[in-house]
Amino acid sequence: MVLISGPSGAGKSTVVRRLLEDPRVVFSISATTRARREGEVDGRDYFFLSPEEFGARRARGEFLEHAEVHGHMYGTLTAQMDDALASGHIFLLEIDVQGANQIRAQRIPGLSIFIVPPDGEELRRRLVGRGTDLPEVVERRLAKAEDEDRERVKYDHVVINDDLERVLEEVRGLIGLGPLGEVSA
Image (cartoon, rainbow, N blue to C red):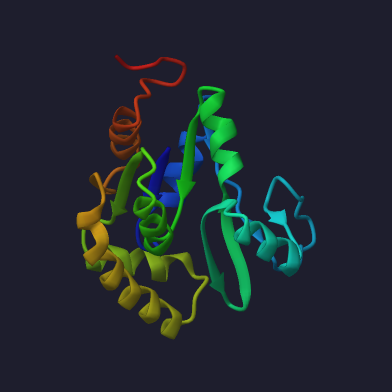
């Protein structure tokens, strides 16, 4: 199991997308109680559950982690991880620091990687450069990034995302993947 976290704008989603090019890597699909949006597919984008089903599964201990976000529940199903690991795959989670803390508290073996931008100025440039958030949202993301950054000491590795190809090489090495199609020694 590999946990990847980092502040919004650090580039963790890009790193994860590139790691998923390797067929040995299986991505965690979250379960959620929110309504399915147009074009979303159950089991591909999310596992869409009713609030009652989510609650029943939580009561049975079927989640590695779970949280309420904007009035909806989200969580990672343990069975998904078990299936991936049993088939010899790397189970990859892109997860916030709170979810990573829940998983670490269970002492599940795995590797945790915290992706960070080179500095705060670069993070601001990336968030503004996206052009998707209002200035006040960018400021909230920057403040949250400061809080999340204090959590980096809990991770096995901190990787500075200053060059995507270098970061991919470093992360692939950390999780035991050589060049695409090869297993490192």
